[in-house]
Length: 276
Ligand code: BTN
Image (cartoon, rainbow, N blue to C red; front, side, top):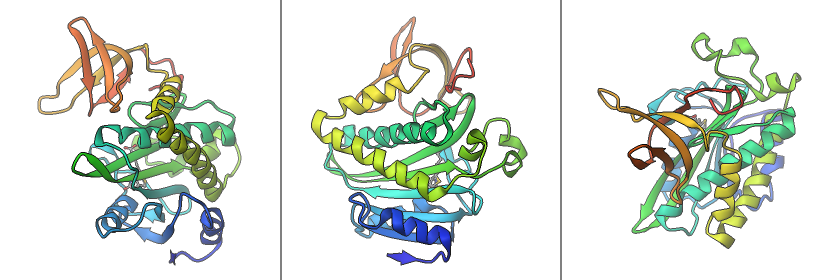
């Protein structure tokens, strides 16, 4: 284990991961650019499945579509878990879905509030985002070589800890619960739920995880606006009809079904019910 953070957080994290079947090594940094970048570097160097990189603070935290992920010190759980599942590439989504389901399950445990998954991997309570997932993977032939699961979970922020431009859209576990919460306890619950869903992946080819993902995703069955990006950006509307085996979102449109793999997808008529 490489431990470079002194103090309670380091000790608490060490207690959480020690002996945990999903964690083989812990790399803990007081500050790092991005835990995903560190985990990718370690993965390419042959690090084993279960390598966990945690940072107290990230200076270049990354979100989807190259967006910045705010990662101040002392307030959030910023980590990347390297996994090497024995799966065909087109089933790698199961691992990400298992992580999203794990997050959606732990959020109510800490806050008493229902969390929803917004495709592909945002975790929302009401209209506000409390966590995001950035999965980056590499293949070896047709199989998965590794997946780096980058998780950003807002834990201790008060409203004014968020920059003004995201204040109306972001929240934290502590804000939702109304009292301070512990980052290492959140990691503990994440690992417990993630382990359960990963075990199920090997038994049913991911069908159970996908079912649970759909159950937790209020946008399924609703009318949505899809923004595929690009210049000029391509947009269309339709009904979010389901989740394909490879993680694509199925959108029913008057012209037939479309599979969406990289896009921003929002409800046409937001309900404020965790689906953005
Ligand atoms: C998103 O919502 O767009 C995904 C956000 C993922 C943020 C986490 S924080 C830990 C890991 N390191 C990063 O640079 N990003 C992920």
